[in-house]
Length: 252
Image (tube, rainbow, N blue to C red; front, side):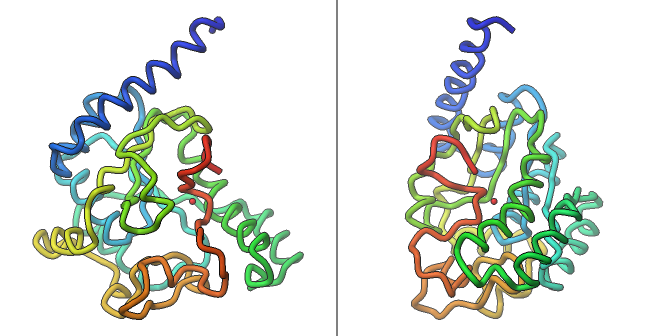
């Protein structure tokens, strides 16, 4: 590929992202995902952690039989309830959800250095744990993909409120799509209820945002949605590295 072609590919990707972003506001969830599949050439990956948002998106993908790969990261520290809804989802839709696991040697080395729960010792240690259990598998999931669908919502955090429906992602060289960006949690919950979609039973016990078991707790009624993630850390921006809006390239 010559220099002119290299410049043209990112330009075309950005132009397509802008067109889709401008159209999303007038479309419902099914239409957004169908529009994405129709407009983006190549493989599209949806990464799910089986939260409410992800279950709504999986429902829209599976019931429309869209050619979008549904992938999850089995970090080795998930709740049993997460595995339960994973199995229930596969049974409900008759689909297998591809699982990516962290590299065994990397996990063994990290535990040898930090201890089994060493992620509590510092923000850097926790981020390195997230990196090997989530970010590295994400890179494998997105290798060669043209599009990445996520369950991010603007209401979840100030950082996520900065995101767009659709944007060109520089690091992975694809289009990142957030089809539920403008949905409230109540709207997502109503959609899941109305369509009888399987959901994680932890949501009924105050767990609004669910990740690895030792890094997630229930939240109080007056706390923000993501207050239960890495609650021992005091910084405002608590992300695992998958969804960083302020950086030009991603580093979940």
